[in-house]
Amino acid sequence: MVIVNVIVQKMVLSNYNRGSADISVLYNDGKDRMVSKRVLMDNTDAIAAEFIRMLRRQVKDQNRPPYLEDDPIRDTVVLRFSKDEEEIESKLKVFLAKINSKVKGMGQQKGGMGYLSSWSQLKGMEFDF
Image (cartoon, rainbow, N blue to C red; front, side, top):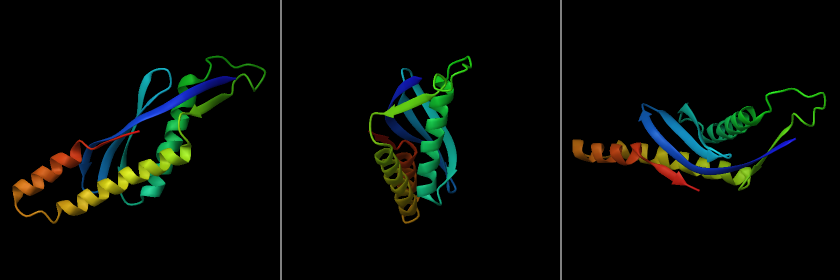
């Protein structure tokens, strides 16, 4: 059995374009790693759940032993998150909701400079755990 401690560190919005966003979740499982995906910002609950599934799958795949044993317990990878998975998922939902509210506010900006300043604030958004 392989036990892996996972620390989720940061969520970053690297790009936003017409309803879709490039979001990365940075984590540490012994090495600093990242899981990224381009998502449509229509259903934040489904997006947050998908990121948790992707994170679990990637960590298990990267830490699976390179050999197969006869005993299935030895091939098992157990993940221990530093925080509760539900808490991580709820924080991801909050981050996605903030992105959506900033996008809606961009349409209300008057003039090009207001729009550009909103865009620059949106593009580098981060959420630290």
